Image 1 (cartoon, rainbow, N blue to C red):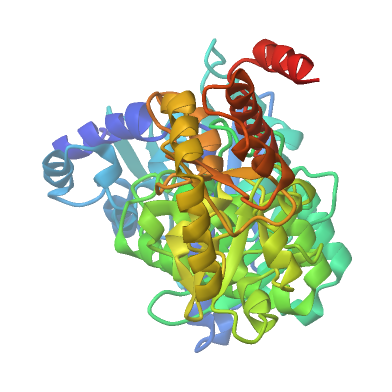
Image 2 (cartoon, rainbow, N blue to C red; image 1 turned 180 degrees about the vertical axis):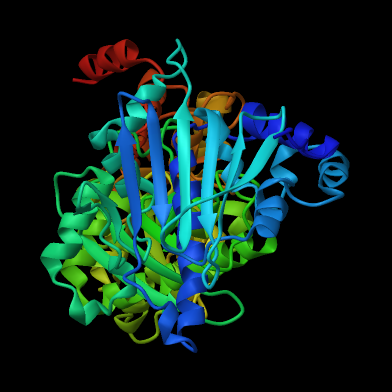
Length: 599
């Protein structure tokens, strides 16, 4: 029989299919199994009104290593000769190539064009399809060696359904095609891509797929051990997950989710090498192992999967079209995850705190990124260590505020103990005020971005207006400032560009001096920024504040400004203030020599 030719555009598309669109040869099996499942779905639907069409539905794999063939068989609805011509003889439909050229990308060919069958030519140099339509007595055989054309002949087939025989290509340096007759390889591919096809996939009388996805079961029906095992197997973690989140979301976009929070951050989590993403399924068929578009960076620690019937796939099912369905799922999913995290915080505080110690900085970035665009969505998920020696949320801090306290006070440093030892903190602790201890590099940037919570402003204890000073104290401080004016002027001269100003303060109790900033960049922010590349010229406007009632300041005030000891004491006070803030001194050798000299 003479070969029939594919349409001109179909020949071009077939070449494109084999050489360009599919980048992963092994997905051919997923495509063919999905087609088999669709055919069985159609027959199953027909059997609802015609019981004679009912059958024990299944998909069979029959490898033959000697003949180098792989046969995939289903007992679905089958095809007539005309349907074979339409479905197999014409790739896609007229106008598809023109559409592709207008889009200028292979990724623009939508899955509805139905070309997944042709992925079989990536692994086979000849494909034979034998099919008998339900209700028909005649079967037909379609056969093709690729773009050179195809034949359709009448043949015999005992039962309705379709049989696809792949004559595998010779092995080459790019691929050992014979591996696709190996039972272990076929089992692995079925488990990877088609584990949740609803019909049994059988190889040598053994069912390879589990059929019922764990995420489609009610959480109450699934044992903890099942979730733990699924997580460890799918995401290669030796630890069980810290938390499991499941949901069936229905509405404008429909999807199921099964998500896990790991106990520990991966070793590369806070590096550029880390790859976030969820496994993406469509009707139980794996589409992408790691779809990064589903998660924002701040929730990148979440592992798991999404299964949606609403996803528009591109021609290969291998790459996703950047369409509104995917974006809608991502938006909905982010809201759902935040909601689940908030429930976790309320229901299991200990477990949530463990998670936050691992991934809290990511959640903080959620409040900070994009100029705080999502700060209101993330602020109630954040915890900070406080002077009460425990983690506190903003709502908890506000609920514990002293009567008359107007602000949420915070201080920055390398540790909670170091922060509580800061001279600026002492007066607030004496008043019984709780202090948020910001010890991570991102913390102060976050609270400055959030600005306020429940009508209470975030105020640094180092802010010049933070201390609650009475009018009487202000008047007394102004009088002392007049008395100390000559000494202050001389200290400013001696320190030069090291400080923007020197002034007296009422904020200090037992300390002689402290450093603060008169700019938006605090001392802690300066330390963080200077650790980054390209930070030259960034600095806080340092102010040396003096406690006029401290013995050291009183002693300094009795010295002549021209006295050498005045200069020595000034430098000593300044360097002591630097060390209190965990800032580097300008010259450690000179400081050591100065201390020896003063002794």
